[in-house]
Length: 278
Length: 200
Image (cartoon, rainbow over all chains, first blue to last red):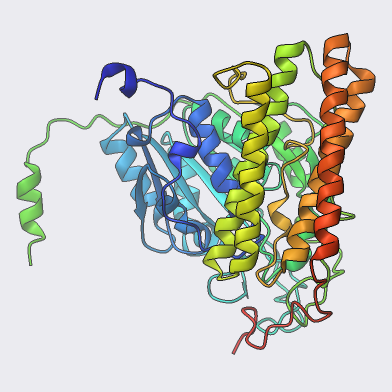
């Protein structure tokens, strides 16, 4: 391959693989995939320099739909996997993707510590307030009064507020996006990737099968009426009092990312592989 | 309050919405804000390309769910929009796509006026619904260019926008004709004897 071809800009379309998504027609995750690939193209990235790591769930299928390196991992452990990858390969752009159940329940503890460690990752959560893949159980962000066959009368439980938690735990960049605004979401994702440290982007992504009422979100979202702040106290007041529909970068700081020195490798890769030989 | 506090206007019994929602729930219209002729061409071309890409994506989605009639229809719409994009370049004697700003065109309202809303899909939708989606998109495009024809600061842009508005109006007419030839869906078109939202 000539240098000219190798350095040609990669289009958003080139970040999409030949594997076609099997999400439900109307699912917000289609647009999130488009936003993600647009963001990569906007930043001039190349597929071989990007890794997309996910857990389990509908949205966690996303690595397969890209031409980047991908890791479709264990439920709730995407952030742990991605942290290891980024520490070992700081040259890669590492994007972590998943859903609200994967990230806030099964992976809740990893979420806290990923925010705290502030490794240079971008974590996007496609939040639809439900476990879609397993047929509609309430997730941590499900409203307490959401009545369904699997939660008659609602769970009665207080909802998890991921943005507040992320801020309290030390995330360096906090934003909310909406899948129905793919270009705006792409810009937010590009900003998140560009910002050093742990960037958390919550994307409201409707589940049209189990939460068809979420189609109304497009009437409810709006650009956040305030500018991005780097003051955590101000951000906390804003985030805790908003109604969950303000879209934009809500907090951006400049805390130094955690990137430990790797030292010298003491084992060759083949030796490591030998440990796992069956 | 969490975002899920949306009003529940949709039947939870079937787990799906009752009506195709192309008429009353569209994104805000992209407001025209166009500079010179080159900017106009870039926007018009991008609008067609983005519409083509979106229809192709919708076709893939319907194909994966074995709704082959609708998949083929979306595929056809994608080809038509791509033809429009190619023709725009030919008419402007351009061999190459226009140079776009970094990150592409930033439409007010999120997406280009002609880009179909993926949230309108339903796995049991019929060609009639797909055409309704296309009709809504064409009408938005027609309005976009008509507004531009009135408000653009450059006379050449106003003229080009007027021509595009006329062309989009013709597309609207063609799709309306197409709709007349397409059987309307049954009242229970979305009824699924084995619905995906059914928990055991």
